[in-house]
Structures are given as structure tokens and as C-alpha cells.
Amino acid sequence: MSNSSTTPLAKANWNSQTARFLLTRAGFGGTVAQVEAVRAMGMDGAVDYLLNSGATADDSTNENTFDRNVRKPPTEEERAMNQQARQANLESAREQFQKLKNQQDGIDRAQMQEIQKWWLARLIQTGRPLEEKLTLFWHGHFATGYRTIEDSYHMFQQNQLFRTYAAGNFADLVMRIVRNPAMLKYLDNDESRKGRPNENLARELMELFVLGEGHGYTESDIKEGARALTGFTFDDDTFRFAANNHDGESKTILGQTGNWDGDDFARIILSRRETSEFLCAKLYRFFVNDSPGMPDAKSKVFSNALAAELRKQQYELKPVLWMLFRSQHFYDAANRGAVIKSPTQLIVQTIRELGTPPRELSSLNAAGDLMGQSLFMPPNVKGWDGGRSWINTSTYFVRQNVAVYLITGLRPDAFDWDSDLAKWDTTALEGAIASRTAGDASKEADALLDLVLAVDAIELRRAQFRAYVKTLNGPLTSSRLVAALCLVTAMPEYQLC
Image (cartoon, rainbow, N blue to C red; front, side):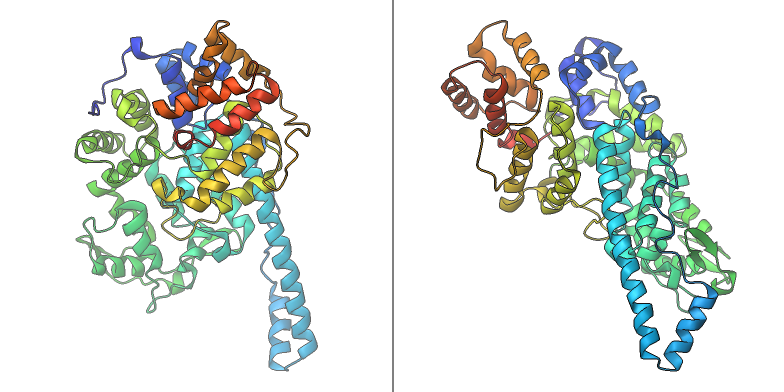
């Protein structure tokens, strides 16, 4: 039975296994050497490092990393010319405008692909894994998709917003989300007007982003919230409050009456207790256990304790994460291997733990799409369902293929198994296996499983793997290690973290 205590894990229970678990859940795993470095910090030092320090070569990323002008709005002169062409029914002029738009569309799609590769590379290389893990969490929570927005720079801009507030203040993030061009476009609030309010943003703020579906609001609250959000729009890459489109009359939202605007609406829903409980339940499923029905009744005791801390800290996330990542409950055996790796987690963790080359980023992004998670393109405003939805007969096949691709360098349609295997130096992993076997080759199979899997393989599978390793007729080095890893990554247990 799971321990629901927020009491910190005893120092005696902090070891290489718990350090690896922390690195995996609060990031994307690490090599054996990185795990040992984190273990040596002690639990408090390790959690503090993840929350407050670290370094990354990507710190120089700024608003000019990508071209903000790909979707630059037409000038007044261009709009006038286009209007004249339409009124005069000038076919050649309209064709020219359409040609220019098509070119712009192609350039923007190409930039979106580059942004996808940029973020995947950052996830792989970052020295701030928790920051990127939280950026991924917020991307799925405040889900917007490029296919609807069709502005690559706005997607990049939003990604940077999530990174800025990754472990910051949730209330501050919500206040900025209602002013974010990508969100305003995705949920049609840029078209919301006094007398014709669009309810999409108000509805999703209540149902999916802040309060949670059915948690203390009515349809009337949604309609009043939509009125409050009228006039919240954007020009190019910048928020703009269009006062002439705003409904400035009195509104009643969750029992509070006033001439509310969008900021007031956000403040009112953030004041509710349901907000902290909804967010912490979602954080729980992301970081602790995403099994069906979680958090269950016992785990809710822990989740609600996090929510109480979140309220106490006025929505500052760091104290809540500090409590979470140090708790007995987080490290409880019932929560080990209780999260199914998302496609992004699977790809990035395989590279970061095993030290494989990242291969071609465009191929990895294509594989992520086939596995159900294309970065910047969640399926809908609910984001990715996660959990067991990641696994089916089709995605499992791709999950194995992408692992083999990372380990061997060979694509699914390549059959020459002996060709320059991986251009991958397996020395570090070989050394980790040797350190666990003390020269006893019969223990190599178990050592590899213990190093790579989040939970023990069932005994039958472990016995079968031992038997397979014996057929390799030699120590687990070079090509034999690569072959063994291809089998390990096909195991159900490898899909867990």
C-alpha cells in the first residue's frame, strides 16, 4: 500500500536507485555517472539543484532565435491594394496575392519544423531537465496547436513563456496566458466582440486550465467570463486590449459582481480552492502516477497536501515541487514504474540514459508523431491524454523501432545489421555493467536489466533474457551489448519510468 506521507524520505533511503528515479521523473534520466553525481549531492542537494541551478548551452535562446516576420501582417497599403483588386475583380492581382500567401505558408511550415527540432535538441542537451520537463507539462496543459494557429513564431513565443514560468507562479502564468497571442488565436478570442462574445477561452479556462471540469462553475459563469474577455486580442506578436470591442457592463462571475475584464476573470477563478486541487492532481499524474483513476482516495491525501501548500505559497510552484520531490510518497514502491513514458520521454530518456547519438532530429520528430506526440501539435485543447493512451499495437511497434534506431543507427527498413552498428561508444555502459558483476559474466544480463529498466522484469522474462545473453557467446560489449539492448527496449517494462 502506498505511503501518502509528505514527510521527507529518510537519508538512509537515499541511494543510486532513488537518485535515478528522481532524475527520470523530474527530467529525462541520466547516465550512470550523472546518477552517481546526483546521489552524492544528497536528496536535498539534488532537489535544490534541479529546482534552482544547472546550466545549459541553450541559455542564449531569445526572441530573435527564429524569424518573427514570417507571418508579418500586411501593411495598410497592402491591404488597400488587395481590397481594390477584389472590388475590381482583377484576377491577376488576386492570383499574385494568393501566390505570395502560399509562399509565406511554406516558409512558416518550414520554420515550424526547425522549431520542433530546436526544442527536441534542447530536451536532449539541457542541463536544466526539470525546467524542460515542466515546459512540456505546460505545453500539454495550456494546449495550443500549430495546425490551428498557423504561426510558427507564436508557437515559439508561447514555448518561451512556458519556460520562463516553468517552476514560477501559476497565477502569473494564467494572467499571461489570457494575453498570449497563440492562445487568443487558438481559442478564437481575437474574434470576440461586445454583443458577440466567443465562449471558447472562458470555457477552457474554467474546464481545462484552472478549475477543472465541473468544479464549482455554471454555464452562466462561462458566458459572463466570455463577456469579460471581450477586447482581449493581439496585433502581430503583441497583446492588445481593444477597448471598443470590450463589454464594459456589469458581470457576475462565481458570485462576484463588477465591471470585470479578462484580468478580473482570471483573478476570480484563481481565488477558488478548486484551482489548487485541480492543478496538483494533474501534477500528481504527470510526476508521480498516471495509472487509471489516479490520484485515488489514498493518493488524494498527498495531492491535497500539495494543494494546501500551493495555496499557502500563493501559487508559487517551487515550494510545492520541493515538497513533492523529497516526500516518502514520491519514492514509494507503488509509484515506481507507475508512469508510461510519453513518446518524448521515451526518445529523450533513451538518448540521455544510454548515451546514444541523437541521430536525425527530423526522423525522431516524425517518430514522435507516429507514436502520438508531435511537439507543438497536440490533438486538441485537452492536450495529450497520456497514460495508457500512449500504448497500442501500432505505437508499440514504433516505440521499439525508434529505440532500435537510436541504439543501432538503422532505420526499420534497413536489414544490414552488421553495418557500422551505431557509431556509438558503448564504453561507459560496459563499465557500468562490469562494476555490477565483479567479473562474473553470468550476472551481466541482470546487471543490464537493472541499469536500464525502471522496474524489475517479471521473472519469466528475466530468465528468458539471461538465456538469450548466453547465446551471444561473449561478454556484453560492443555489438553484443547493442543486440541485447535492442531486446531490452522491446520489453513492456522499458515503456515505464
